[in-house]
Length: 313
Image (tube, rainbow, N blue to C red; front, side, top):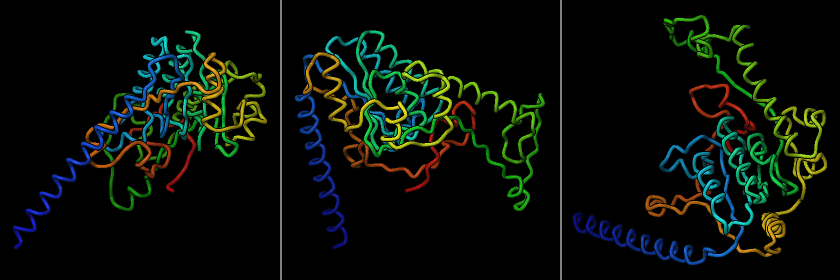
């Protein structure tokens, strides 16, 4: 009897897997058939924390991989049928290097004469604003959370914890600052100055790209760039956002700027799910990881910022 039930379960799993695969193939086939072949507006999804590359597997779904996004933007730049680009942004921010890479890729698209519209969804903070600053127009929902213009590096000090549990790190190093940012002791004043100088450089770069991309003076940008967040409506009042609306408004605006009209053909460049995504049922937007910023264990002051601190939901 027990073997019979095991057999029933195995056969059921095989049938369910087959049905899922067939359904996925049909769904993907429909998606491919609907892809416009003529002039169109390209939509690039930038959702989740901005990182240099995704970790692969299940954790890739909610990561804005600079490697992927830059590749998509460079492909679009060489495609004459793409007449405008909409950046669909929903991110709390991320690493400086990754944000800079995406920003430069956006500039390359604009250098080819292709207008770029940034659309802010729920959140477009810190690094999310950084990559959008050069956009021809920025569209945001009135309730969008944006801003958080600034730089942060958080370094844990576990000295008291290590003392309580009896852990002592024995460090052998070749230079005075080689062990800086290790968690068994607080930073020295000299180490704080070193890290602060790196963060200051990143902050100055942030201010520079906003001044270049927006119709704002350096004085105005510095007044806004104190790390605070803004609603979409407040950002529009301060000149950080051009238009209040939704993604349809952003696409319509992209069509008008590109000469395709206010109802252009649209192609979503979000990668199609692979077999693992289909089989397990994890697709983009379905994995909500309760990250708390900053991300990662390896602490690099260039990577640990351009993000709004937010906790588990």
